[in-house]
Image 1 (cartoon, one colour):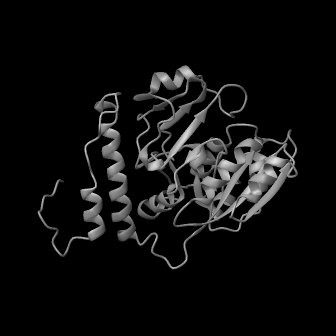
Image 2 (cartoon, one colour; image 1 turned 180 degrees about the vertical axis):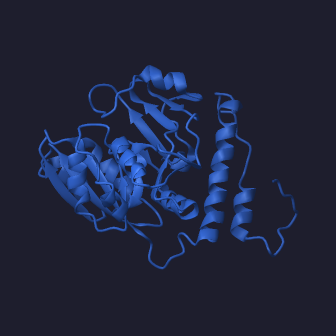
Image 3 (tube, one colour; image 1 turned 30 degrees about the vertical axis):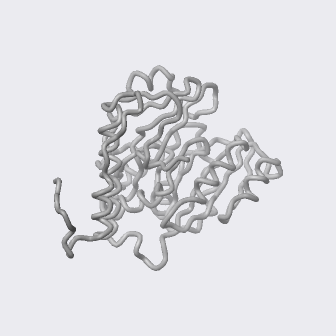
Length: 295
């Protein structure tokens, strides 16, 4: 509902008024305004919702922020520095990292360099290359001490409010498990970004983006953890938890971008052509939502 006033009344929250006034028409960048207008409105809405819902639920006002154990498996040392940097940049939460090295020794120089550059506590678990992916994640998760577990993929991009948004969604929905919509994809071989909007957000669902699953540690253990399989572990965990009665909520996906390359690096296989077919928008280069706060 648009509101207009020359001066904000005393009863208006000053920060809310600032956020409302921050909306500005999008400048045409050559790709056409229609390609971004709806997206900019949704980004504006997310900022307003964050502020209003934090005030209503009390999320983010606690003296001690919730503790989140971020579980990440990696067999790609060259990606660890960037991944740990994004985790360290998370706001409004206390974070520890459980890193499962999958066929990569902790003595690897790129691993050591990434760990030296991370200000967070990192627990490293080493596993042989032949260990099923799900088992590597479970080995790492077994060392968790946080109130919540969050899965993190080493090759994707996460905004600095990613974990805070998930915790906020859990607070206002009352869900047992939360995650985001799989909305933005960077297709590396094509140097293109696509956005799909067929997965709606702010809904109850049995499916969320696998790299964004967040749930209480007790719920994770009750579901039996990740299935000890080489792939399909995210869907397996969600299916088991849902069968046990857990409620799953999917929030917005504007602060998350999935990377898709070619080869055998991904545990689930879809062609690049698939992402082009389902895309609502396409842009040349890396073009995430502004919510990602990419620099």
